[in-house]
Image 1 (spheres, rainbow, N blue to C red):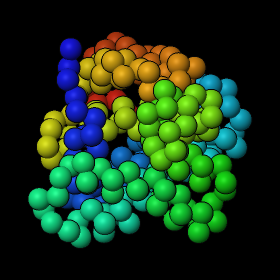
Image 2 (cartoon, rainbow, N blue to C red):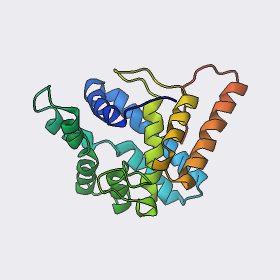
Image 3 (cartoon, helix red, strand yellow):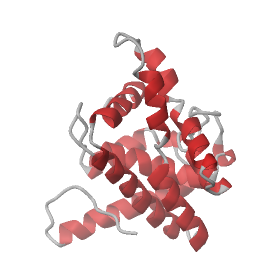
Image 4 (cartoon, rainbow, N blue to C red):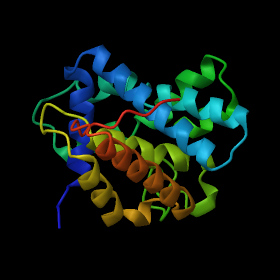
Length: 207
């Protein structure tokens, strides 16, 4: 069983956001957006919803830009538990940014709640089950998968199959009505690449 400290990952993801170039972070948003759009279409959601979730996927981490001023304005010896308080501000800060820019309520809500877990252990509001907006439930699994399958300054990318195994270990965090179609999309893409003899593990999803 692969052990992963989720709190340390969130702090390190924030560090990565600041130390990696902007191009890398834009690429993360594009990947989440494309995968979320594919999953929304797999769920037979209407075209307007699919468009909104692709927009939210692109912008879901925009609040990290503002949260970074809280996180890195202080002492380098700040405890991780203290840093986590600031990391977890980014969903709400992102909501404020997109709300002020006039994005739809649905897009704003997706961004606000993209770190909620289906079992109520997420943030910012500890929402449970279907109280979490559907778009946020879709973004949650897509965001985690894309992060796990991407190189970071503190670790190499997990291969796609290992990333899915990690998600299965934490499946209580995800809506099974969303997770099972997501799993199908990923495995179908892995099978397609294997049949084509494509040895590159990184999956590329298309809108």
